[in-house]
Amino acid sequence: MGQNMMAKKVGLDEAMPLEKLAEFAGDYYNDELQVTYTIILDKVQLFVRVPRASDDPLQHIDGDKFSMSRGDTIFFRDDQGKIIGFTLDVNTERLSFKFTKNSTTTKG
Image: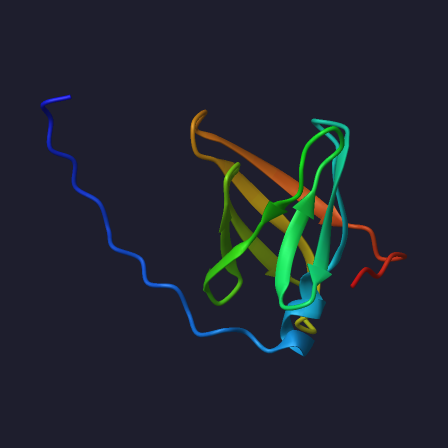
């Protein structure tokens, strides 16, 4: 459209071991949207399962940061290092939503 845009080049990390990927699996709930996103581990790839939508692959960027078609996700941990939720930054809307992991479910 005739304009130059500056962007940071992001390189994808090496493949994360399965036992590390499994830490991210589970059900995550957002009170504002009243929706549960389920992170599933399918062989060697994480996917986000959302009601009434197709599964969306998560691409590992770095550390606890992933990217998917809906936006960027940054997982957060408690003091013991256990994953307790993530923040979804929606690319197109400049919105951010916090999801909390349901501690009674384990997927993967």
